[in-house]
Length: 473
Image (cartoon, rainbow, N blue to C red; front, top):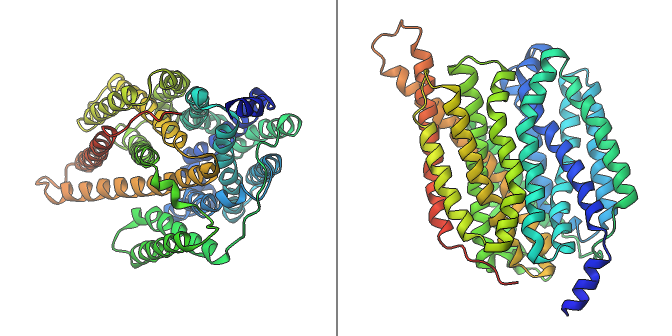
């Protein structure tokens, strides 16, 4: 049996396949995070409100939340080459429309098309790795993918800050376009089919329930920053939750479910999933809170703020393959638990920041946080997916990628809400209402509260991490 698997692995030109995914993933994720730095410029250019421009992020997340759960089914209907070409074509088409966009509506459509490409690319990338890379090498390869997933969002704000300093926001997309086209050509030449489509039955009701469930929860939490008292927020989350419950019940009763929930029967998959979700909540809540602190409390420009966060992002990206190699050698426990301790320590450091905090301290804390994340994310994810049997790979990757979107939306929404309520609470208790420093002190107090929330989440992660064991494959 092992020989057959070895022969199967030998059929594939692993390096060109991985390079195709690395290029496509890097540029796709770069344009996702780079645009965040241009939101202020877009408000002025299009004459729109902050809540409207936020739809460029919300719409992107919502599209991922709807399409990624269906990806497990899509991966079983089409070949690797077909999906790679379609996902990159969608990303290129969306990027081109965004580069030309004369209005907010056109840019919004472009973002949705880009998200459709990403929603196909991410599960396809992880599923392909699981199929072509033997388990004892997966840590290092998953680490390489982690380099792309971590490094791209890290350099995105800095590069976009540089672009916005000298050119218009359209150039964020113009710079991405030729690289995406190159990735598509490279993929057409080298991408191989690594799985045989089984074409399971399509259940329309499952797709509808999945769309209402995941879409409702992601959308509800994405707009929760506007206020939890909004009836739309509460009703959307409740409808989403009901949709998810009905979706799960239906999947367990079907002979050929759209998403095989049997993956949850594997304990290390569940532990790995929980750790990945906790990491996503910590990363995304910090990624929205830190730039706000730098630009509001410390009055830094977008480029300066981006530069300050760059070292941590680079270190996280560079160390991901190193941590993957250490995982292959020693297993997850000796990486995950120290990683969580480092993350908790760095978040505690962030919870003490004020108007006088030095840039060196912020860079150091961010570096420590991203170092800790590199020790947790890929080892936990790889260990969890390693426990699944081959036939559950598409479902396992779909579950992980979908719930990451949900966790990201929840983490961001809760962090912003805590920040807002902390700011308001401080302002209510001030005695010297005329002091112009008070709004800044209030905002910083809200930042402290948001980081305390992140500390609590990370401590929960540490408790979960104590149960992780190496999967024998």
